[in-house]
Each structure stands twice: as structure tokens, then as C-alpha cells.
Length: 97
Length: 291
Image 1 (cartoon, chains in turn purple, blue):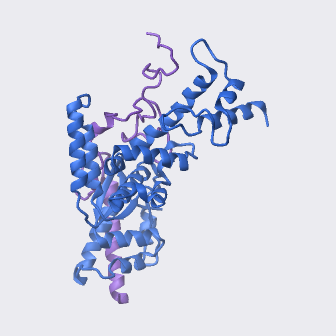
Image 2 (cartoon, one colour; image 1 turned 120 degrees about the vertical axis):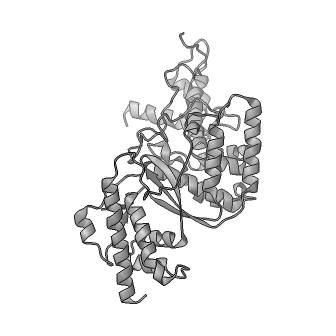
Image 3 (tube, each protein chain N blue to C red; image 1 turned 135 degrees about the horizontal axis):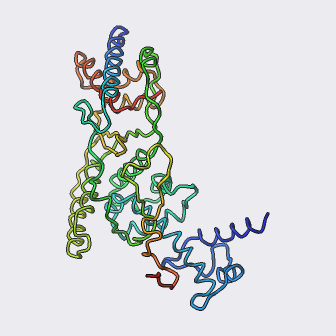
């Protein structure tokens, strides 16, 4: 690529960067922005509440996929949604009703 | 070593030891230690359960927790390899690559490399299985990797062709041979649809799933897996997008990354400036560029 062409290409990229940054600044949380084409949402909301696994009472995440666990804090992995709710008796005892 | 620390290590060794094929605690561990004798040394029996049975509860719960998290993380892989084979795969993988992290989020971190060493789980649709595994791991990383501060006005003002642009740690890019993101979305939507308790509905879903997987044709695609407003998105990329992002991620300067993107490109030269402006606008608006 000729240097002059490369300079033009970089200028176009920087122009886009500035434009996008301005769009981002102007956006309010949860606003729908026509410039933003995030892609396909990875799952439907209904799927968050199903548990068809064989070991259905163990290791289920309460908050996964619901936006509570971003930024690498790993705060929600491995929580039991059923913990303390009396659904998982395993030691031969009955839960107090 | 304190007595407490020693006890903790002994209990951990018992609990984290793999289960038998019947999902029970083995009478004897792989290193020859008898679980029956071991349990008796630090657990009292009660009127209903022996020491072994009381320890077994924790051993089983530990592994059930791992299985459940693994199944939750790889529903696409389960659909692609089939439920029975997935069960074996999961047990073999977790036995070979047990959890070594404080978070179960990392359970699948070694799955792709492990699968490459276990072709019995890849056949007969090797590439499809690998693609799905890579997508689902990318999804996990996109879900909870860090989000760095965005470029500010001063940063933006100094960008030139020699600049190194940093991308968000949660952004993952993939080159795939199958459109597995469409399949995964369809599978998730399907398993999330109503009447989960009905056997007929469950059987119908399974049939649809099998047909969907069987019908999936190869398609060479490029994909960004990223997070936006706390949800994970799959964004199709053009070849040039992918090459550009890949170059930036590998540490190329902006100018060199742009050159790389246009090697063998079908985009006419006169259109490239507009194309670059559009994609940089989009990526910048998505917050992909960071300090």
C-alpha cells in the first residue's frame, strides 16, 4: 500500500473512531442507537429460567446471563438457586416443613 | 502442618476424587487409599448413615455441582455430540482436567485442547464439535472478562498510523467453519420454550434438536463474541474485519493492521476509506477500544 493511501486509510479509521466515541458519549443507558449493531443476542430470556439437567438442584447460577456478573468479579458462578429452599435433601433427613 | 489444615486437605482429597461410573464414591481411591477407613477416622456415623455414606454425600455433591455447571456452560456441545456421549465426555474431561480455580467459570478452559487429544469425542463431526466448543468458551469469556476504561478525548487526539489500539478484554474473535452461533441461539431458544414438564414436548424438542444439528451445513464465518449492556452478543464479521481485529489483538500498529486487513481483499480500493470509517464508528460506539 502506498504511503499516501495508507495515510488516507488511517485518517478514515480515526474519523470513525471519533464518530463512534461521540455516539457512545451521547448514548444514554439502554437507549437504542441505530449506529450500534451489536449482533445477535446470544439467548432468549426464557432460557434463563429452565433447568433440564439431570443434576437439577446443583450448581445453578442465579444471576448468570442476567447482567449481574460483569467485569470479571466472578461473583455469581456456582451459586445454588435452591440452597436453603429445602429442595436438595441428600442425607436421608426430611426438611422441616 | 496444623491439624486443621491436615484435616481440610484429607477431606478435600476425598471430596474431589472422581466418582465411579455409577455416581457413587469409590470404596478405594486411585492411589489405593480406602475411603471406608479414611471416612471412619474423622466422621462419626449416625443411626441412618455410615461414615462412608456421610462422606459420600459431599463427594457426590461436589461432582454434581461440577457436572451441572459444565452442562450449563456447554449446551451446544451437548446437542452436537449427543446427550449420552456428552455425559461420558464430561466425566472424562473433568477427571483429566479437574477444577483448579476458585471459580467454576474456568471449568471449560482446557476443553478445546483436551478434545483435540480425544478424537473419539470429535467424530464424526469433528469441525462442528470444535467450533461449538470454541464458541461456548468464547461466550463464557465474553460474559465475565474485565471491561477496561474507554479512550478519552486526549487519547483519541493522539492516534496515528503508529498507534497501538487496545481492545476490550471481553472481546473474542473466531474463525469458524460452521454457523454455530445460529445453532446455539436456536437451541437456547428451544430449551427455553414453555411446557418443560411435558414428556411429549421434551421428546419433540429433542427430535427438533437432532434434526437441526444434522441439517447444519458448513459455512466459513467470522464472528465477534462480545458483551454489550451486560448481555453477550454474536456479531458476524467480514473477513477484513476479522483480519483487522486479529492484527490489532496481536499488537500490530493501526497502519499495519489496516494493511493486513486488505491483503487479498475483494473490497475495491475506492471503497476502503468509507468501509474503514464505518467499522471503526461501529466498534468505537460499542466501546471496544480501550486505554
